[in-house]
Image (tube, rainbow, N blue to C red; front, side, top):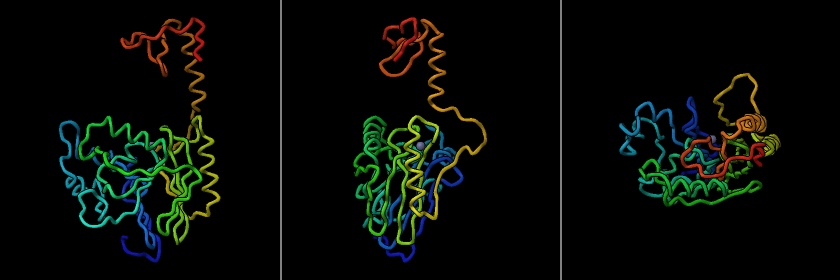
Length: 269
Ligand SMILES: [Zn+2]
């Protein structure tokens, strides 16, 4: 499929000079896989402004360069698929968004949580050609898996991110290995997941690291635990002003809040 190559090639078709929109094409001897298939939100916003000016056809996105011109990948392409699989790192729009336009005979590999999130998104989003995920074929993986697609082996390892079920990948090609981080963080409550990924990446012998950095600046970052402690202290002081919803916190006065007020001590566990 897709012809044969003597040397593996990695092409970043989305996600350079922008936040998200990741689409990374990996081609090796007998295999072609895409890492993420995200919506280029900032590129799209240069030309469109919902709900007044929205793209009506995929051709407009192609001609404006918002989606890459790659043969045998899109739902409207005729003939055989020229892509063996898509690997989805996590369920954020800038990583999964344009799967809507993917051929349905190309499987989408992702974690189990991501698959569940994608089915919820599929059920609840208004289906336009940009957001119709019906008919996608998911195959789920877990940390420790070694997924072979022709001469490419992909090893997913969990990472911590602001959406659950995120993964990074160690990708082994016939030319060598590289690492794709997806989106990750080290200051969250599950930073040990990111540490596991960092160890796997360090031990992979990779000669290339593909990562996305949106805020490279010095400064102190609060941990989520610290934020939770501060919130709890504020809430404890605000007697009678905070109610507990079934999940999480809502401010007093919300007309939908029907849960009883917190006890005066503010004990909220
Ligand atoms: Zn993300």
